[in-house]
Length: 115
Length: 115
Image (tube, rainbow over all chains, first blue to last red; front, side):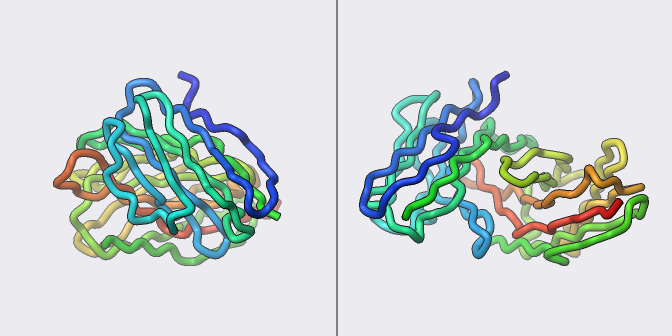
């Protein structure tokens, strides 16, 4: 299996620009998560989807952030307009839903720097 | 809301030493607990998964225990090696009445094994 695939791996953008991060979950997984990781705050859940439907987006910091999952194999996280404080590593993760002891698999992350 | 704490935040040990990493949580209503390893610039890799009905899991030099009643888990690493240097995070798989999953992460323990 290819694992969770994220793109881009690294992005440097200017403040005010739109940023789109992409994720392809593991085939067959029906839960998808977007996390943000910083030194100060650690790993924060931004949003998670189950069967392509957003279940909990309470972690999305503000209206500048939006996430979509148009189908089971693709999700995007968009920041518009971007700000320097958005600089972080953004991880996408997926798992198979249910409560039978599933594990969660992470992508390699998208390293975002907003200057 | 589940709160997960990992102490210490950083640990430095000489090679060959046995060590224990700690994870505590506030809500014992969990489905599972996972220990992850994160290398610099990388995503999270699952090490061990303990179901809520289990007390421990072992993989090689790693042993993870779970005590739900006290809200604690430990990760024991035997005969530590420099290659074990990484950040270790624990994650709780929470109960959900809705479809889908919820995972709660600690802030991690940064381990350095000195040759």
